[in-house]
Image (cartoon, rainbow, N blue to C red):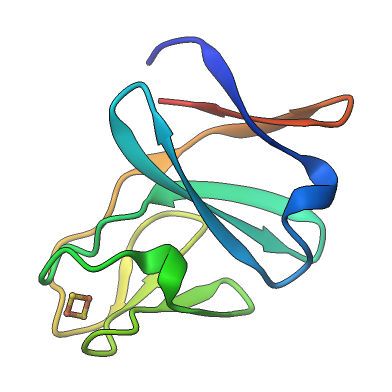
Length: 102
Ligand code: FES
């Protein structure tokens, strides 16, 4: 893992929202679940749609393309057709900055 990189300000991603960022060449999605931020691979392991373009409900993100679901806290698959997890990335808040480690 590399350094933590600033990706956004705390106020930029509201509760229940998703956003995606390029962090050192990796597409990373960040989810705000009740004020806690989680980082995971934005690229769905089914057919590469952006998970940040999907729907977040609790800690589950649903891919907008074919309905695969992933646990945003671990990257684990919760519902097929995807059968491989997405990576999980550490996130921390420093002051007003959301930082992700890839
Ligand atoms: S690309 Fe995500 S479910 Fe198919």
